[in-house]
Length: 372
Image 1 (cartoon, rainbow, N blue to C red):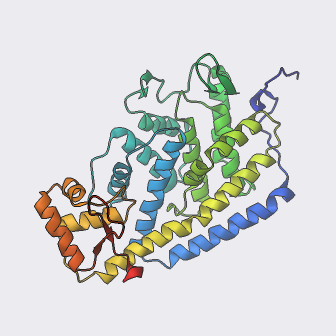
Image 2 (image 1 turned 180 degrees about the vertical axis):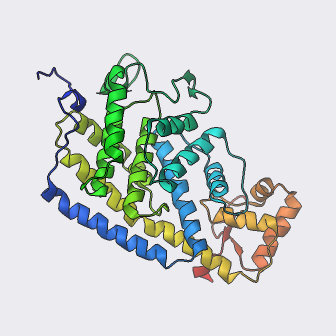
Image 3 (image 1 turned 90 degrees about the horizontal axis):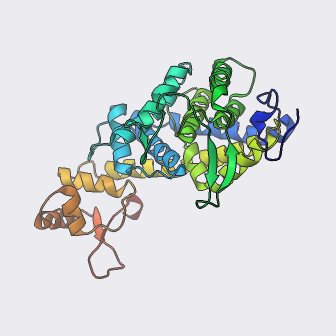
């Protein structure tokens, strides 16, 4: 078969007959497996409530960061509220969530909570419809819940100076390409399930079957396979959060691999290094969850009103900016005088303190358990 300049992996004959160097991957794979085992052990010793809180933290991060990779920034409070409602968790300060937020949440939950349910064309179409409830991506109408019918290029650069990074397979090939992918994904194989997650991610993105949303769906498929690997529907690490940190490297290795041969050792090494870091970063999530639990345990006999509980929880959940009495009044929907009384009450109870930095307005911060 003869190729022109700029050919892609999917233009090769039998392009999905991927190969890799087992010896080159063995150390990285062993490290991933070891970290997965340690994480499962850590989570097993936590009580149900703490595991649920850790799950909420991780899934919120996963939904937010998977969208951010594509340049879409969802409202964190809406994401957290949507997840809490769908997980049946009773937490303070739930807010209404937009349809596109609910759709992203529903897709991620379906992928991980129902990881043993077979992947199908209908299921992928349902995910796609959930991501684009209005049938539009930004200003543009797109084909929803159907394979794309037009050509697909991944392009960057200003108008007239575009650089084509990738050209996806012809639309006429999509039914057979996706049928082959779905059959492979659902089949039992001797292949290591972590490697399968990495291959599935690359394979789906190379086909690029939808008008938009391919990256988010590819990461949902990856989470689905990694959930199977863990033998659990509960997610305590976020691959998407780590990919977001390495976004430029992510796109670079995908482009290099899609312009290469069917030997995908380089991609799988990158994938496992990214997964390793995602597993290591769970300590940060766990530390936050345990800190919250310790706080509420210390203050189990302290009386709080609903406004105080709301703000305290927000302060422990990535509160943006500085807490002032005016911000308290706005968030808690109360008068400035009531906000100030709430704050002064918490200062007396050694829950809040004035920030040492001072400034033009008085800012307040939480007294964390380690400081008591």
